[in-house]
Image: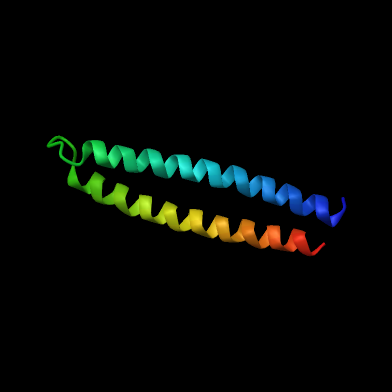
Length: 77
């Protein structure tokens, strides 16, 4: 497999991962907004959900930087 095709496949895979993580993060933030004031929801769930949402956001940023690096690498070929 030529190097250019390999890089294109890696970029395609990173796009999938980016999309899935973005959907998860948006859904989790939406759940947090909807359930913030509910008395039946344990506050530990709210704090844990907030921490996970922030961690997923950092992973999204990491995947984005990695994809951009691959795109720059592709440009050099």
